[in-house]
Each structure stands twice: as C-alpha cells, then as structure tokens.
Image 1 (cartoon, rainbow, N blue to C red):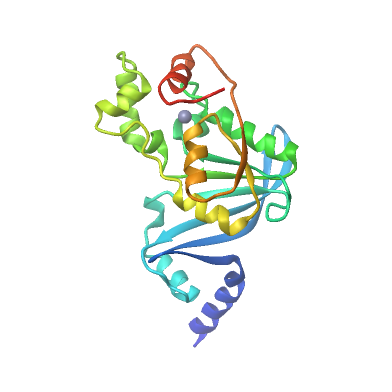
Image 2 (image 1 turned 60 degrees about the vertical axis):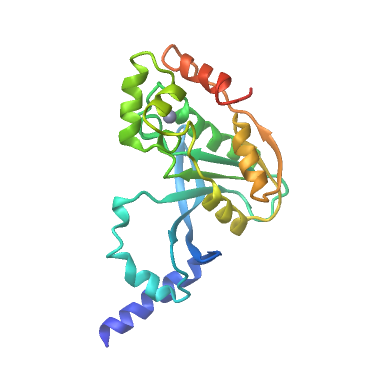
Length: 243
Ligand SMILES: [Zn+2]
C-alpha cells in the first residue's frame, strides 16, 4: 500500500514533464523541460534541458515507463538530449544545431577536431540571437562509428589516412549518422521554421527531406590550428562542407 502511494506521487510529479512521441510502431519518450543554469564564459545562462529515449513499443502508461527504468541499463547506452534557450516554441526565428557527440573534443577539449569549439560557440550564438536549441546526439560519435572505432581511426590517421579514408578502411560509410529521432523531437518542441547552424549541407538536406521547415543555414568555422587543419580541409574537400 505504502509503495503504491509512493509510486503514484512520483508519477504525479513526473507525468506532466513526459511526452510520448509516436513514430510509427515505435515511441520516443521526451522528458523536460528541466532548468539548467550553464556557465558560458564565466556568465550563468539559464537553458531548458530535455532528454529522450527511444522505445520499440508504444506504452501510454507512464507508470510502466518509470517501472522499466531500473532494469533498462540506460547507463550502458548513451541518451541524447537538447538544450533550449528562449521561447523556442513561439519565437519567429530560432537557431538550431544538431551536434554530434565528440568525447575527445567536447569533454577533453581535443584540438584534433573543431567539435568542442563548435559546441560552445553554437550555445553562445543561440543566447546572442535570443532563441535556439542545441541537440546533442549521443549515437553520432566519430560520424556514427562509435568511440572505440574512432580511436582506431585516429591511429590510421596518424599513419597517413585522412578522416574519410580511415572510416572506409574500418568498414564504415563516411557518414552513418541518422537525424530522424532528433527531427521528431524538434517537431514536438516547435512547428515554426528554424535556421540551422552548420557547415554541412548534408545535414540541411536530411532535415529538409524529413519534412522540416528550414529557413536557412548559418556557418560556424573557427579554432583552426596545426592539429586540425588537415581534418577541416578533408571536411571541405571530401564531405562537401561549405564555408
Ligand atoms: Zn570532434
């Protein structure tokens, strides 16, 4: 009886913050918004944060979703999330970034790529602009090859392969990232058009093909150094990135 009471209290606290997004036979559970004060260059900026998880079946009863958490081993799998700034649902112009997780660049500040710089810079752009959303995509490490394979790809790169050749040599496509989940979440948060922060026209295409209303693109270059010059050059020459 006590356990039941405790359960219903937890559900009553959480249920208004859980959204079920149906994607055909599957479901995405989106939880948030959660207040997230962030240190951005020494200044505290308040973002709203959401995380989501995909499920192979559609469960409408959120108590069942909560009951499944402790045995789902979610810590073994990374979840994606989105950081929202301003009135994202209603503001006329919103910037978005679909940021692929980069363990080495985002966390360690590696200069072998420009990810860490792009992550922080896009957050600043959204704050300056007044409205935006940064999608942090957890299954996109190394353009979708995973962290362990990326370590191997780095070793190949130290032995003369460029970033695209290294992914091919390990049996991967150059780019195996999928944006469908993030697009579904974006649609749940906002119906108006968005401006995409990216140097990658493929991202713009993926979003447009998924039926998303994209009003334009704004580029993001910077933090070029001797360590990532060649990587950035390959992105421009082989992966069609444009300035
Ligand atoms: Zn990176």
